[in-house]
Length: 325
Ligand code: F6P
Image: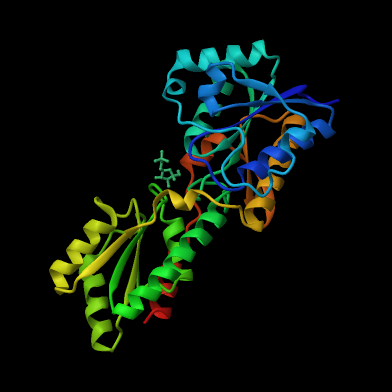
């Protein structure tokens, strides 16, 4: 006999490709186990407004290939405050929902954790963010697609950079985490990668460019994580021009990185973690996030997802440097 009878599922924070695969997995795994399931629209904001809709297996037909989230999403300020969460818990109770599965990132997990501690709601988190900045899991849903999307743009910029012998500073998303920049920087053959986890050494970057030019290198791609330094790619570029006298171009990739049809990896990760969330709830577990480590599903206490260290392999900076000489 399952510990839960009615699961509510929502997506919250920045959307990420593969969230739909996770929603589909939650809905169909729940229904297969005889558990009722409802979709909560627009994240915690929709919960507070009672935007709760019953879901059937057909509600999630033909969505596995779609970017974005069919449940829509939001960043909900009221949920940071206790009265907001009190209302959210009441809305869940009124709808007869006894377990909430939240697909999102750091903000989503804080909301879930508080709901569980303050109001005894059974909660399970599923990591969905392009930033890959969640501790306890090696992969978040959306990271793979965003990396491939950014890479496609970087490859295109390289064509024009090579044709004009130019230096491009390309800013990628990631909030305070350099995982996306590191991934696309290495994969895109960047001559420089700036990430928040390593203080930006613009003197050294200038030397790399000067020395590269002396060795006959014409063009350079410098990938800058948005959180690497104040002012992002534009600030890094200006500082390097001041030191080298070489002109540059800046390209901020922006929200294009959040869209598009999810890669196979994001679809399979979304499906696996969505199913695992329901299984955990049916086993009476709560206050946990489903994650992936070394290919296996793991369950991580929500608190550890923001207190622990994110998986980021800084040694890859060395690999990028040596392979881009
Ligand atoms: O967390 C995902 C993310 O895309 C970050 O990389 C970025 O800093 C932020 O969201 C942008 O937020 P918004 O879509 O609210 O501008």
